[in-house]
Image 1 (cartoon, rainbow, N blue to C red):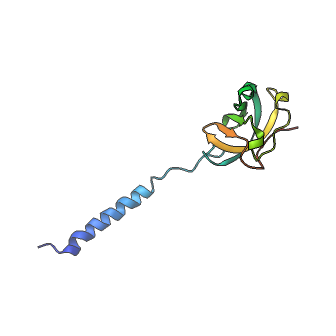
Image 2 (image 1 turned 45 degrees about the vertical axis):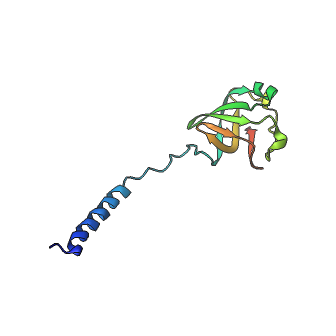
Image 3 (image 1 turned 90 degrees about the vertical axis):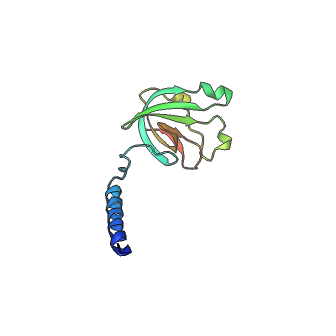
Length: 126
């Protein structure tokens, strides 16, 4: 007859070894500069496109910028009175090649919305 301790001990040791091996298989941390959904992001980049057309029908204007990590669509809501952030100065005055700083919330891969927090903004760099 097998004693319960001799039967369960190897089983526990095997389980512990398996957990130890699996714990080594964790996901690596996000690379520097990647955007994580739902987080606040501060970016600097170069404007490649400005589309204020959606503002005509209460959509978000989109300023596309290129950062060291790739292209990011910066969403600017039409109804700034519903935002905590101040409205950006002269969005129509932005042109491809302008350098900007953006503070906003990551809402999708490659997308940041400037609106939800008082410190959110899109500003042209000198």
